[in-house]
Length: 338
View 1 (tube, rainbow, N blue to C red):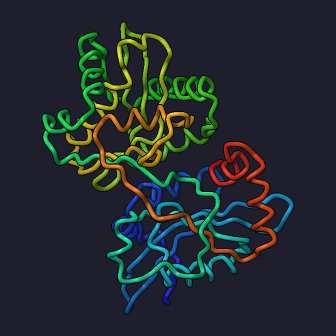
View 2 (spheres, one colour; view 1 turned 30 degrees about the vertical axis):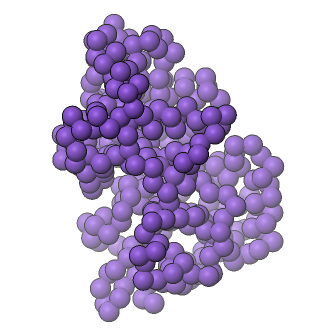
């Protein structure tokens, strides 16, 4: 196994090989700007770069150890396992968490198998499921594939003349930020902090990978989404909305305009960032988000499991045990997503 650090001169080559915006060079620079150590590596076969990935390092409180985190990376085969063993030992890691950007349906077609060094993680961070919409369809077919209620709500917003703008200016970002934190406070979930959002916006906007969609009714902003673009995909990772004028269905129109924007950009997929499983429980606190996304007719995609490569089992089990005692994964999320 030929493992080498990736240099700045290899940025273009690196981005060609990764499959998700979270693994993009620009996302790594954003994380680096938050003061989080970033490691980029490439695996070579016969002298040629065949696989690349980046991971972050996070200090475990009260120890000298670190957690490595590799989200949306390559298939966890023997090559990746061998690479991470070397990286983990060199960087004093207790374990490395791996969340591959690999659909479950692909596993049966893989020539390699998941390496036995990996342990199935009891604590994933990304959802196992996601809605992904095929943007190669015509607008007419996309509308036809939606749930009737979703189509109806889009027409309601259009009838009320909800105004949509794609913006990248500072004022628009402040509107987005306010709506985002209004939403997290109202719905009681733990989102990223303000510094996180400012940095991701600054870095990815400069790289022309981020834009904002803002819906307003009677000049009052009601919904704002941050959209990311990478390779052939448009992503919807973050958004916020107001409780005012809910009847004008601004959220539905923003989602439809995000789809149309992706088509205008010539992209192939709309990635909605996460969902519940095929038998979603209506009592689940995330069911409302799931049902909203489901209405747009995307394919419910299942990814393979999250895995941990463990180097220090006592610390790993203590870390995992503490995490199970804290609601909403606050401990792990604060450590890995700050």
